[in-house]
Length: 373
Image (cartoon, rainbow, N blue to C red):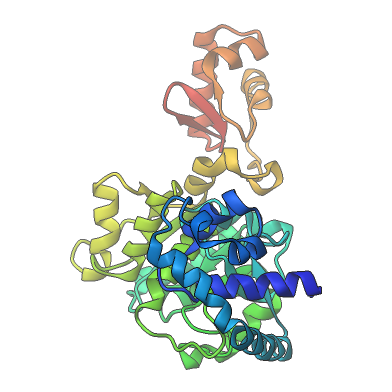
């Protein structure tokens, strides 16, 4: 870390140590003063010109310099410990800070990581749910996590017992990538029985925390963790959760962040399904029964090679069916476009599309749109 970066990190830590100063106020201050250094060294009356900075906050900013040496000393010690763990500290302004996470309303300005991000991680999907899943919930989690991994989509979860752990484990077993967002410091593994899983994720993905080293997994940390889980993902899949479960909180964050929510329908007679079924009933989550349902919804946000790539079954096609099938792709096409591309009448196209659908090769979408299945 260069001296300039280190100095900026000390200034950032100073500002974040002030009660009442968070990411939004720091962004407001930066929009006026353009550097962390200038914020801390500007005069009291200039600080008051910034929206949201009261007299009390301006006074606290001016007094924060008294803590400079202490903050600097603590930071040096923490960076040494982080280095011994093989971890990194990444700020919002660093090049390798996750792009999706930058776009949420309340992004963490500092994250701690073990493992390295790769290009594939830009195409991530969160899988979350109850700590006490039914057999059905376990099976569905394994299925979705494995199949997403096979399609080179990174699986994100919270390393908790139950659905989270199964999602991570299934991704790893499928030689996929997985990201675990935790509610403690990187040196505090919780739950303790996930020590081996923690180590495996570090080698085949990334562990993320916004909490300083040594932070215990206290209850108030998990809402902050949940907003990162949804914030770093293109969408969130809910597999079994009670109405008051943490996964419902993650779904709420996903809604606020304008991210997609998916839910697997569950047994009406068990409490573990109440939350996921309620999300579907309220229209807040798309009901999904297979990975292709998710990929269709996210198709425009995914790279072509990451999207649906289902091998064509070996079935006999007529000359006209072959002609129609060959103009279809993994991106949906409207019936008039298909007719134009095949130089066939619309009615003839519809007949052949219907037979292709019966053969399991084509799927019809709303608005007379068709896609290879």
